[in-house]
Length: 294
Image (cartoon, rainbow, N blue to C red; front, top):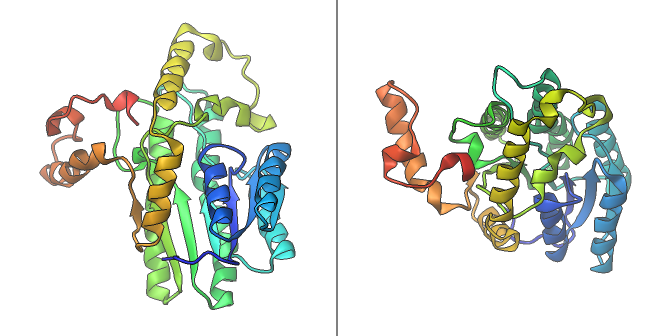
């Protein structure tokens, strides 16, 4: 739990836009100094400039967090700039459509390496440093409501977010059992009004070949249009982030900002105990469509 951010040193990945940028600016507004890490270094520098204009320290680091070496680069640059890290926000994440039987292998690897492996690598580098500091620290892993429930859409995204949530739960328990003064939280929002529908612009060079007809099909275009619509009509980013910072001050593990999913989350355990099938939105009396609400 953190209530006073003044002078704390923070690292945010995927910090050049969307939720990551809002995290970086929100931390700086509350008095923290920030490492702004992103796959787009020029855009990261613009965010760093905004933070410096607030009177805080900020350094942009160009990094592809799906690569372990680049996660190490972020750690090294943080130590060079600040010598410590009090807050780690693993925000970078990507999404792509595709069914189990047709999604290209490169998309599976890209989604898992970004959404899961980056959390693993970043925590692997930063947790020993945080423990050595012997001061209170906070880790926030940005996941999604898709990490707690499922729908008949985007198996790579949903399964990667479930893995990221499970990883966070295990690390939370391990640090608790070690007596480490490090809080771990997972932020699991529903749709937020960001430009995540432009996720393909974040593809690293090794996964940037989209010449396959799959990426130019009518089906692909339809999925892209749906994704854009639901994100553009998501919850306002500013309102969501105010809830996030409020909950970070309450020492909670699950940061949930979209109340519409409460009924489904509460019913899910009961359905799992019944061992029959996964719970559906229709089972809990809501007319919302999960395919376009997550």
